[in-house]
Length: 543
Ligand SMILES: Cc1cc2nc3c(=O)[nH]c(=O)nc-3n(C[C@H](O)[C@H](O)[C@H](O)COP(=O)(O)OP(=O)(O)OC[C@H]3O[C@@H](n4cnc5c(N)ncnc54)[C@H](O)[C@@H]3O)c2cc1C
Ligand SMILES: *[C@@H]1O[C@H](CO)[C@@H](O)[C@H](O)[C@H]1NC(C)=O
Ligand SMILES: *[C@@H]1O[C@H](CO)[C@@H](O)[C@H](O)[C@H]1NC(C)=O
Image (cartoon, rainbow, N blue to C red; front, side, top):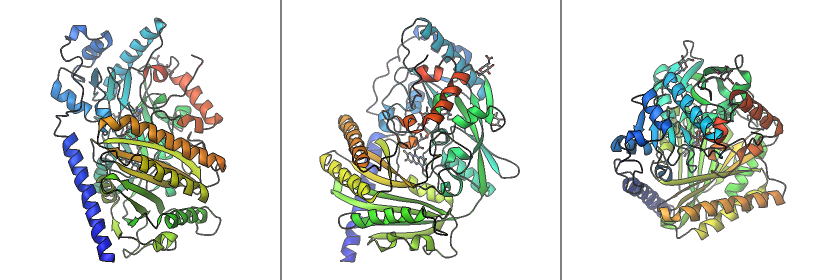
């Protein structure tokens, strides 16, 4: 019986891996994307380009990649991680090498913005800001026919002499940051998955394996270097521009373009990582109960119940269309590795251990290899969508949300290549307000919250709209089920938000006020409100 199931799991894992490889080959054949649209401006002579693009070419020569430079342009477009964002074709991509060049570029965008507003016509976003380019939100960091500010060359990693902090360029990928720091015997808290970029993750909030110890990633930024709307370069920290420093902790791309972050670092130590894969068919209720009971316990006042070394748990129900099966996957981390590889007592005492699983592993490894391992589940160049909502730790709401997810997978069962994880992650009161104050809006929260996340991969462009509308509807259904039991919560984890979501509505009036005031002060003409495309706006009406 066991060996038979193990066999079918192996087959399933093989099928998933094989399909991931097939998808990857089909969609990312060394830069010759079949799906991208024809180059709109390929034949446009330079003097016929819009004036501001000509100015960019003149002011920062060598930094502007035009469509006419086919190979370089294609490569720069394909820097976006999700395939549907590679199909959005900007007029040009600007890749500054240093802060001065970026500052010149912003000044030109500001000039364009101001001349557009003088005509009185409503301004739609004409430039986007891109760091790692991983956010799968449609157009999160790119813009059709506009300018993409590509920050990938801002990727330096500079540890402080005393090893307590490290300055990281916004365009670095977390995995590269970790590799540099490994050599110095340091760790910095950041993304848990290789392709993710520093900028987007840190500005939107960010959850790390070290969050139970130190809080959200944004709350561990000591300072920022920022290019403001008028092109001036400032440092924001607790002592200089403290109001800007505060709102950058969750306020994303509303105030300026960040070039680098100074983050807390810590001495290298290995992690314990536990993984489990189980059949969902007869285990889902048990898994949900284990999750609920764990959060109940970890947020109780019992001594030792909250353990700052216990990261996660990440519980996913994964529907795999190719084999028509749903699996449960559980990911646990303990940041203080036990002497042996055995399960740490903290995790051993949870209901998760009694789940019947096909596969169970328990490893002690470096932070870098834990992140690389998760990176293998996230190949670049697939059609991918994320979406999120937040609920309180209510058992019936969790069960209802799970049932809604199952109904959705039934509706989408004919979508080719569908890989559909439905994930629970926890934000515990023991850590949600650790670190420097942010604008996420969790100050008054004293109960555990569950971030529900969707992370959908599929094969064909023709299914984009179906997936988008179905995920939206599914999130709305979950919200309604939660509201009916008063277990809904306004907070939204911006890092996973879909493009139509409104994460700032969940920040609370006080934080919104701080953000609006900072916007008035640092961007009085609203460059980042009306000129910038991608991400989320503060919706300041009085301008
Ligand atoms: C496979 C995968 C794994 C993930 N794992 C995690 C995880 O472990 N923890 C977590 O918290 N999140 C995680 N996320 C979510 C991730 O944090 C977001 O997608 C994040 O936006 C990615 O950052 P980026 O720099 O790559 O994004 P980009 O796509 O480059 O940018 C995202 C947004 O931030 C803005 N932005 C980026 N840089 C700047 C800047 N310097 N100045 C101003 N605005 C800027 C952009 O304009 C854009 O709107 C994951 C996502 C994926 C797809
Ligand atoms: C990053 O930070 C350092 C130190 O604060 C600063 O000197 C440097 O100019 C910044 N910019 C870049 C692009 O590294
Ligand atoms: C740029 O904007 C900042 C913030 O509004 C302001 O303090 C600074 O004086 C401005 N600089 C110039 C050169 O206008």
